[in-house]
Length: 151
Image (cartoon, rainbow, N blue to C red):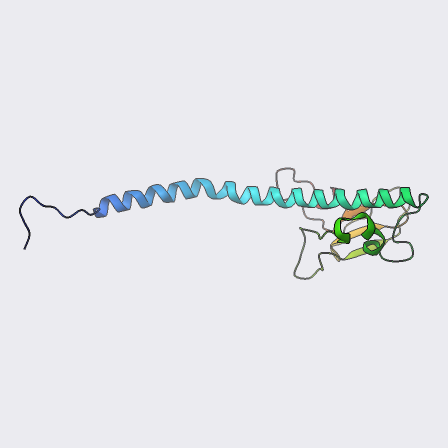
């Protein structure tokens, strides 16, 4: 039996619907910003890993009379002393389901032109000229729109 003057404290259906609608609108506004931040972070990681590897290549060449790494052995092995904990950085972009993210394709170019990405490995290294690129021809996911291979 209810006592007069006493009401049960509860939300009405209309109040609940309004709150759910407000939460939905806020989520719709925030979701694209979160996804864009993820794409930008991936691009920044790719650039940072490239910078680390390219710096290690330059340091190796400076310490070895100008000769480039990877001539007789593997690039990751040659660069290990110049990388933090000797770990070769992985490539954060590309098809990780079909390509090992640490794999390096060795090419020998000439004429000062950079190799063309073919997507068969994560990284591409020109042993003759020292060019090191991301072996992925798709365009950057963030705002620049440049191909990953041009980073």
